[in-house]
Image (tube, rainbow, N blue to C red):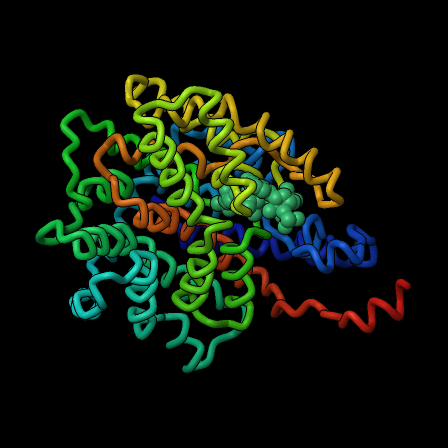
Length: 433
Ligand code: CMX
């Protein structure tokens, strides 16, 4: 049975050749232009980097290595990581081999727990997760090989080893963060032979008599793994990794971005908003009540979390997939019913608010539809994971797969250090006015 390392070692030379050919024949072709608005506006829509693991089509959503997300929603997370890295769906042997790779590397060192136990008890779970990742940096094989001296062509090999160690340990680390931060008792160890998603579900320690929570975790970890290269977490990981900082530093940097409320933290904010509406109206609010509460939120200068997107212009298929799961497993749950009702109301509210904004000379809201963060919290809440500030940690465990797959491929392709050119406002005025 071929290992992931052997499979990649076979594929990488062909990919390098292909990219060299593309650069040689089409190197001078212009693929993007940048306006002044884009330069001030977070480079939205500027095509200035390559990511082969997935693409996000504005009208379709996430496509992973050519597969529309909802067509591969049955994949377990380890299969998704294999797909992201190699471009192929793994057969049973490859899936088993990757699980073995994780089993060998899953033990979180004791010093990590010592550090986490010593953190202030009100630390945010994202800060604890990231601290745990950073203290393990001393084990980076990439850094050891780099210090000894290695060729550029070899970079991907220790980068992959660090990635496998990190991915193998992340479920235990993240579950440990949950149990320490919320005083849930002893840590639950990794179970050899149990898959990555079910292991994580098990180590959190929530009751799961029917196995539905493990199912949700596999789906959750599948859906959040990757979202092309330009989002804050992936792009940050890419930039930091491009300086040849090792995967521990790079992933940690990416996750610090995921911890922002406009990015991954929106899932925490979103459920908080849903619960606020239920508290205010004493149960599942009516459409009218929701609409009024939404306008109140918007007029107080806040965003509606879970809605809008920098690239998408339709309902996020990840949201649609979660909604489908909810309808199957928790249709009677009041929080889920509120989430569904919010979906009936918010796009219209945002559209109306957007029109008001435009009349007032502001930018329109480009996308009034839900993103991934709009629905996931209700599902977690149903299964007893009620601590909102923990939600972005779950997102992180999953997103690490995409960031690491991209990082390994970038090291394999010898992607250059990131260094776009910034210009000053004086320069823009001189050019454009
Ligand atoms: N509620 C209120 N206003 C919103 C909005 C929302 N859900 N979505 C966009 N807008 C506003 C923006 O804040 C911006 O206002 P200003 O011009 O006053 O700054 C204006 O509409 C134009 O923004 P846009 O072009 O539509 O969207 P951006 O690409 O700039 O931002 C995003 C995208 C996701 C940050 C934004 O839609 C947002 O803040 N959504 C709520 C937070 C959220 O759900 N984030 C999670 C995204 C998914 C993820 O990364 O995990």
